[in-house]
Image (tube, rainbow, N blue to C red; front, top):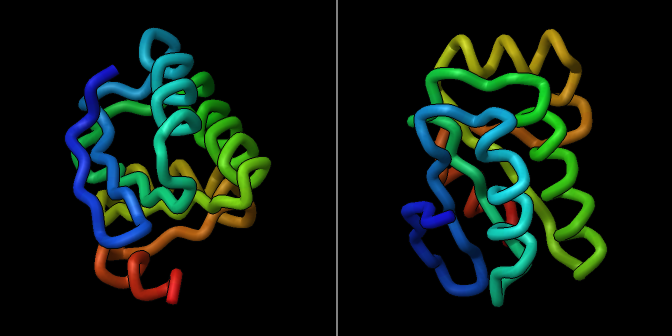
Length: 108
């Protein structure tokens, strides 16, 4: 999986694809847990649809990163994505920010 990414020191910001579902979930987990940096911000703004496999992938990425002394933070200004995270209560298990800058600052 080739995700657009940006690097801010020890932090990688990855931008998710338009769809985050069964077809992308396994690749997303593998890609993000095998980066050379373990502090990852996942920007969901470009994602239009997220299914249960995509949501499970977010938790799998978090677990994989925590196992390597890392961390996953989520950013989104997309109201639908934010509502999905709230309804599924994933926002209680993942830190969710309105902007990449806020998420980057939270690592300091």
